[in-house]
Image (cartoon, rainbow, N blue to C red; front, side):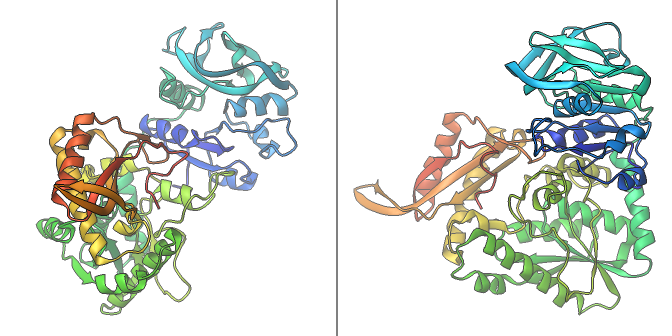
Length: 511
């Protein structure tokens, strides 16, 4: 989008993505940019308001993050959150000091007077604090508008300049009315309307695709997952037969996945092309154990297969991908001080030797928004509700070298785990569930015989966008049923473990 109603400057908070998501959920479009975005780039986005995120640093530290001070001269409403509040105070002539009592967790917010940002919210609401510094002296023109037990300045405002700041985090789940506070800032302070939704986004993207593509053709890689299926449906709506959808069987798919994908697209009247490149992928992965190298090989091979398929068709100028906002955030440090965790096979552009231009219509939306968009486009609910599946497929769910035998063992174990999870009703309650083959052997006893076989790990997590996740508290009897069936029915596995790590510090996938 050229016009961004609310621009979020990121100072490294683990919650920054939630700010944009909460605003979008309220119908106000929002984007995240690095804290050091130039004032020219900020002006070019023509925002109606700016939010300064939280962050782990102290504003008075030598290496702390500071935006262009010109943002305070734009005449735009500004909301500072935690570090953002301290930054406002520090920059505009107040003072920030280390707090005598750190404040982490829930706190009761007490209003001081009446403020438009608290409109239709309750005095005494619970908010989430997470800070070690505090504002000691307010800048000129500011007043306190709320307090908490350990924060005499829990919220402050300069009404004349439309600058507001919270010491707490309204974007997190634990802040009872936090979503409403963010919406109040957008609606009553910035004058934004709640016009952002996936219906309007679909129309906008279809128009953009049509304008960009013209009479050319677009090659679209289809995996059968939610993201690529939504991209293909969006493109089919926009350009019809100019779409060349290619499904690559890389030999790293789940059980029966190829057949399911082909059937789904056939039912929608989309002429899907299947390229069987399983032998090529597996041959290139032979002997490779480093997880990052696996991802690179798979990504490069995908591009080669697409290129070979493209040469069979005249007029292909573009390659469409299902890149999401979270992919971009994790792969490229677009959020200021955030760190690259791992590469994504579909992020970062194309190699120089390719002549395609990229089309990434989902690049600026989150996973939950993609699901809503899919329903808008008429995709079936059971497909839209599928758990995320990584581009590198089962290759990153096998520790060490990838080969056909281990893939068959993993597929068999994964089918059982998913069958039990669906039957229990927990599949739709969780974000992602899968099995990992650890390639760690241990001694077991089956019947009267000693075994020395592989270990399978079950990983089930709860999340909203995949940026953070907690392990799912699945009842023990369900986990026990999964374990018993896998060990009894899958040759080569004699031990099953359950992953109880959260993200961070772990990632969702093991590699």
